[in-house]
View: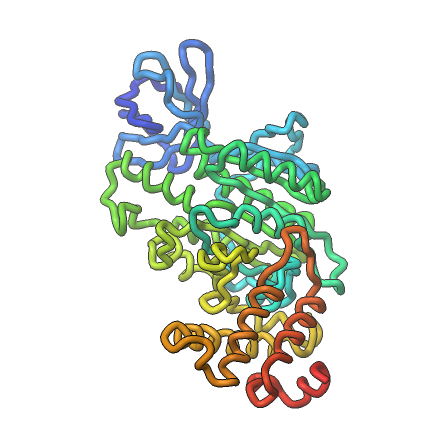
Length: 456
């Protein structure tokens, strides 16, 4: 029997406190009825003896302890999903906002997901092509990987996200279905319209399902938006056998909401005011990506986060780096130099790329070329520091060749048009063209047979 409670203790921000509650469950959805017949939903986030704390998805504006009643549904937050969700746009709580009507399906899925047994995971191997040279060649995105993008305020991460969503595809040898789940957390309506319009313009919208949480939406919706998106990805990957790329921006907005709710719950803060469970909360999102041994589909996760003050040691990027398998770091200096995408390759890495590139995946020279580009560009950075002291004209002849290599590398390889979609082969050819600037004796990361086959 569903009980209805009237004994509301207090309301603080997006939270309501109820006392004398029996048999409540953590994560349970409650139905809040106001005197004006309006209904809102909430989720139990804390239970302490007979005290229950719940967060209200639509916010507590207009609510008081005197004008509402609460029903406990006994169920977690669930959304209806079927294969018709592709091409649709949903709110942060999984409601259609594109005018296309409700999803009618006999199945409901909890947004908290299904925990993946580590023993049942399959090691990721094949790659996903983004059409961006600096990512495909030097920080290759492997199917089933978690690879975050570390950006900063004012940098073109939204443009990069839109380009990846529109251009991403599986390797040529794959015959599997591929789709993208795109999630925007705490974005302005202008940014949301930009993503929608660009996906429609490029024709990618038919292969994308969008979940959008606006900046003026109730803050608690930011908790459900990424979980709704990952639930949709799990359905498409593990029930429809599709390969899904989840692109999510901005994880920092999600963490800020987490800090605000934690403060409202009067929890003891940890680093920079974030709750002590920030690591486990982020892991509950990131670890939903991967591949399963008994399933044909996969989930690849590409979260984007803005580093406050460009500080890579900030708790959000710091903890993200412990959970994920590498990172792509955007550079403000490259942005100021009008280089797009401004990928700083030296602190960027993909820990799984070694097993998903080379013969049988991309091309036989890919691993060696990537190593050589990293090595040569790191020398460029050191030589530039020296040139600032003694002047470029006083550099040795070989150092001046490295300076030229650095300029060509940034202008021809790193820099590409927003609509430019390069194949792996095109990226490798550009890399070889730039490496020819250096004498062969400096190409110490390339095997002789590779140099003979591709450089002459």
